[in-house]
Length: 489
Image (cartoon, rainbow, N blue to C red):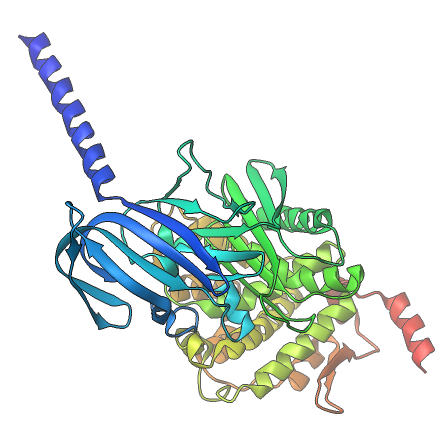
């Protein structure tokens, strides 16, 4: 009897698992995406899932009216009969009764301004970006998606295609597909992470140049975090779908995919130099915030502070130098001065209202405060502690396997855990104290001048021993500085 009882227990367990698997399969969304026209750019999406209502994303990253691109929405029941549908709001469609399939089309003209192209789907010329977050209805289930593309077009994704030609997606908001006929793929392995780069367009450099640069950055990021970004990561490199100046760039990191759009510089040196910091910044997003178990809008840190850290990585890799560092801080200060709300809104509140005209303040003031924090901490500890240690502390305490917590509180706690640093966070992050850069940086042996519209930060020689030792940590060379001074006199 005991054996029979055990047998029944095993059968019941297997039955439960089998039923659960079938329920999950039945509830998952199957989507087929077909490019039906390139001029004008248009796709058709067919979905299979029991639904009576479709709800689409209408705004994202400051881009509004995204759902207005959706047209010709239809529903059908199990027999194939049409189910009447009405539009109840932008991006909201209600069926008269429960349906089993639906279909609609999406206009995919490149957005204006061009920088929005890193954040929403588009098609232009020989390639385009398809992001399930704005193409599919809001779903909380797995998605199995397949594509029908023009002849000689390919699809690139961090997700592997199965034998049936489908991509199994666990989080539609993170899924990005790069499609086109001019795609070029490069692969490498960085310890346990398979890194893939898919590029399109013509550049002054070869693809291997960017792959090598990105690989070096990822190694730096891994060292800073103490862990890999995951088993797979992908970089999409493409020109903007519309003409832009060479210095323009726009990027976004979704899950394990980094989207990077850039203007096309004339020379290899100029192009790679322009890529270094923004690419490091965006690749570091694979860890910050993506590998931190933090919630909420702490953009001032994972954008502004992390942009500063990205610049420091580029310096360690020999892509930027001490004068580049000072010039970048001068530009950040100018950006801070040009922000109309700089004396009215804290960094915490600016992050909460980032897409309401405060993005520049989040980046520039965040980067500037990181600069002041790092210099102050290094000076107070005689170079034994730096902002790098704060990041390591965050990764130790709030890695993705940890219990999730509120981001602003966790980051402020980490910043304040360093002795003597509470005043900086209180004044410049939590409150709206004016950053008097000219006065503050004299303590570090620097001076800020504003002879015209741009701030110039330079070394205020002669330096005392503490100032000299501090600036040497950033690549300051006393002998090179003396030679340069003689040449300019």
